[in-house]
Length: 215
Ligand code: AP5
Ligand code: ZN
Ligand code: ZN
Image 1: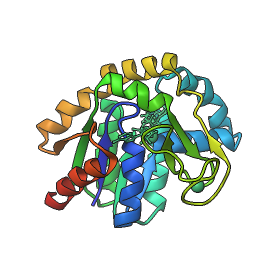
Image 2: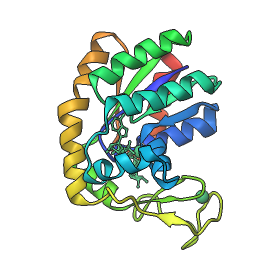
Image 3: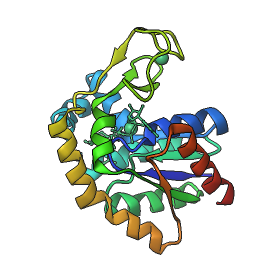
């Protein structure tokens, strides 16, 4: 089963994708995570995208489509969760072509709906484990033991450089301008399901599970 998690910055795509990996053995394909990895490895692509990402703008379609193509053609999985991809109509068309090329289909697109005020609070309170990638929040998903990741015990806890109000405003603008047209695109294909992303993490997970079980 292959699904897209669609939603604005801070909607909870990464949080829910990690749950699906744990519970259903699916593989998470987060273009945001891939681009951050390219930056920390110091690759040429990482250097090219660093400023664009820090400002909250989208990197080029060519770069992200290339990243997804590389994974889809090399990773074997029971199902992929596309997290933060596609983000433009051109990316959506490219994904349809790539899936066809590898003999796979898209089973569901889950739009996670969250209002802007909640997104600011979520993004500005977020931190992640630099070793295992677990996603936390100062208030809604705090650490059980201060200074140490619940999952792997690491003290390497990080905040993203684009998690400030200015970059978030830009990310939201990009979302409404370039990504939200995908809602109509997938609705027209009969692939779209909407879940209330404002509910608690486990409640959202339950709503997504119901969508997947019907797909
Ligand atoms: P990316 O990393 O994809 O960032 P984003 O889309 O802005 O989304 P976030 O990761 O900020 O949010 P999320 O929905 O994953 O929320 P999370 O689960 O962490 O992209 C970053 C940048 O890379 C882009 O700006 C762009 O430059 C570039 N890029 C990436 N993909 C691209 C593409 N395809 N094309 C072009 N450019 C691309 O949750 C957020 C916080 O809320 C956490 O603290 C979490 O604990 C908390 N939380 C989650 N769910 C709940 C809940 N239900 N209740 C309360 N708190 C919650
Ligand atoms: Zn994310
Ligand atoms: Zn960890």
